[in-house]
Amino acid sequence: MKIKKDITPKADIGDYMKVFACTAVMMQTVLSLVLSTNPSFSYQTPIGIIYNLVKFTAPAFIFGILYTTTRTTNENTWGDYGSYLKKQWSALFVPTIWWTLAYLLIFPNVQQVNKFNSFGSFCWHFINGNAAPHLWYNTMMLQFIILMPLFWALAHWIKNNNTRGIITIVLTAILFGAWIYFYDVQVFHGPHEQSWYLLDRIFISFVIYGIFGVVAWMFRDKFEKFLKKAFPILVILLIAVFYWTNRELFTFGYPVKLSNAPYYKPSMTLYALLVIGLIATLAIRHINTDSKALPVFHFLATYAYRAYLSNVFWLQIIWRLGSGFLPQINPIATIIVCYLLTWILSFASAYTFHIVWSKVKNMITKPAVQTEAK
Image (cartoon, rainbow, N blue to C red; front, side, top):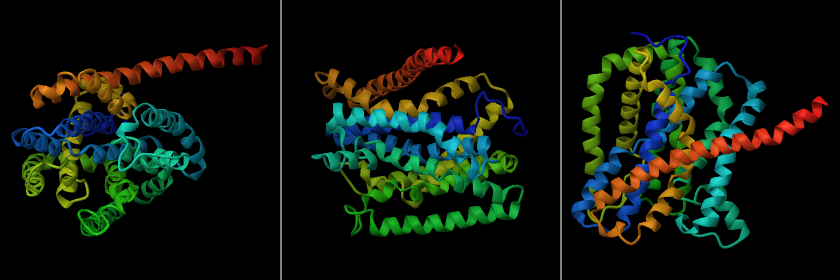
């Protein structure tokens, strides 16, 4: 079987990555909040394991964004950069601005590292991703959007050239491995753990997933053949690497600290790449069989980013409304309840705000169009 050359807009691999990543990142948020209530060690163990299970979100999101963007814009050049940024401004930057303001002004308690105490520190938190626990990723992801011409150039360079594709994969793996080693020695429990923490939101820390997203589209037929043949091996490797990540986390002992399970380790990098491979396999199967799930994934992917931005906001509301009983019930039950409600509210709000804003824009633009016609 081969991926259809004219891939239907019902969904692509990137859509699947975005949906799985958004769905999983909400679980990370819930797990972190429940763990902050200091449950017994018997509950901290499954929380740590589940956290490692869903620790693929940022890599999958970056892979998905670059895969889809390469599919739709790989012929672009610097001349297209202005129109590209204009589209991304409304799709990504505007929602980011509104939700960051909401966190800083409505829920300032969710700020990370420290709290803003002046206009300057307010602006700094607005930019650096400390406004909420999940916005560090947003700061990193937007860098890929700004640097997209570099990925267009990469797509042009490797197009229909197997040797260049292999060179790109090998060099990326080597250089990224060196970066991970540097981070492990200097930052993760290293001498610069506190002073260099912002390195976790620089695009270099996730560039391997972006580059591989570009390569996956440019060599999509070979990518599918590889996944089809390697699927059983990928499953076995995933189980082994998942055991590795859990062993690393629990060697730090109790209480469990989720900060001891960062993305910037060989184990987590391999785990993320393996999960990306398995999600891509599922997406390819659905595309080839024209699955009825395709429109569902495409619909959810359309609102995934905005749902991701809002998830901590809704979780805060759920947690406060349930403060009288949520911390007292079984932690696992609390996780399930909070997660399901957060997921529903996040996607529902993303869709609702989109519809409302579209109607507002139509109301604003219609009079202007009518005036011009007159």
